[in-house]
Image (cartoon, rainbow, N blue to C red; front, side, top):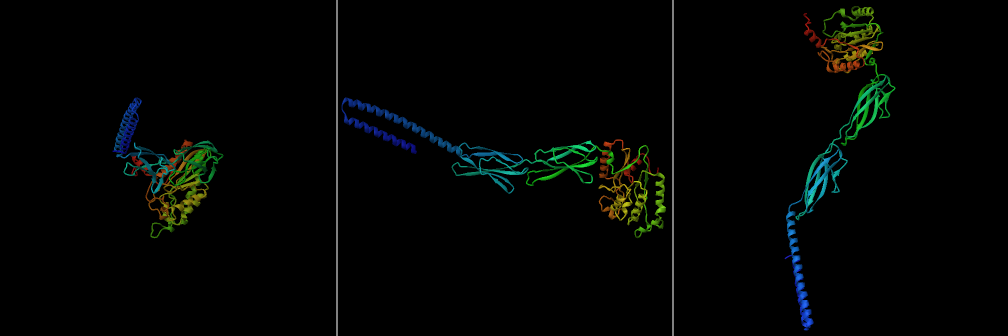
Length: 495
């Protein structure tokens, strides 16, 4: 019997005894009619009280039975533990989660929330926390949630973990476009792709071709350079950004070749001015191929005193002098094999040729042939002597071969022709000193890709400004494409 039933029973018994005692007291003290009526009246009252007492007992018993049944039912339901889950979302700097639980009897609660990155851990102090801010971008975190419940057997913790990567911040990029405005100004536009809004432009500068800084913008919202000479420039935009990966600020730069409204005359490496109204005179000389027998290497018996240096005037220089005086050219081209390199290990033959060519006081432009790189002075030394000569037009670019440059003919302010002076390589016995520069090749004949790309870039640039300019090429060894074309159309050595 439950405590409630026991108490109700005691109360009912006490009520019945109390009623009986009252009844006996009334009967024993009066025998008159009034007393009888009073007694009867008391009996009726007692009877009603008994009936009322019976009703109250019934209701209490019903309530007790209902509570007992409810308690039994609750015990059955709580025997199944509550469940929980959560879904995780992220931004570039935040990880959030939504929590769901199935706990109808409210016996469970979150007791721990942790966010883990490698050996680092962020522990939430407030169990209502649903978001972690200020995180690294593009990193994979582990979110751990512990839920503890008690269904009568003591606290039971349950932990679930889920991984989530914060969104990566995209690296910004900048593209530069420009428009020539006048002969001393140009405008430009910056196409900034910055999805994450992390890019900051820190400087905009203009550089000449020699690398010297020409101008700089103090107002970084300005998009025009004015008051500068009519030339090509390199525009450099400096910027910085933070990818929020713990590496700090990253600095970067983007550059582009820009120009004012330019004359095509500034594009070639060298310009030879020729007056209008006549055809330019171009003298081509090839294979001067100077041999100095006194520089023959040990064991070389293939030369004679005929090739001694004191005979250079008789064998070569007088013919050069006669030809130049007869033609009075505007430009002299020497298309390779200036010297026979293996007979010029001291470089004296090349210096003698430079002296005679400069004596004409006429611009002259050479290319190297397959024998020049044989000299143990090295091809870099040879190129340096040519670049230093007063009337020599020569430039050694950082391209395959040695000496890829341009010479333009200008008449009346117009660029009428451009000579592309190019090295077709082809040396079969280059000296170690020549090979050391990394762009002299052994037995390779022709143009390499970087040479072709250079020609295409410069040629396109010239044609865009001056479409009527004609192109010519000067090189030493014919490329294989020539041989293939000759063979295709029946022109062979035997024919």
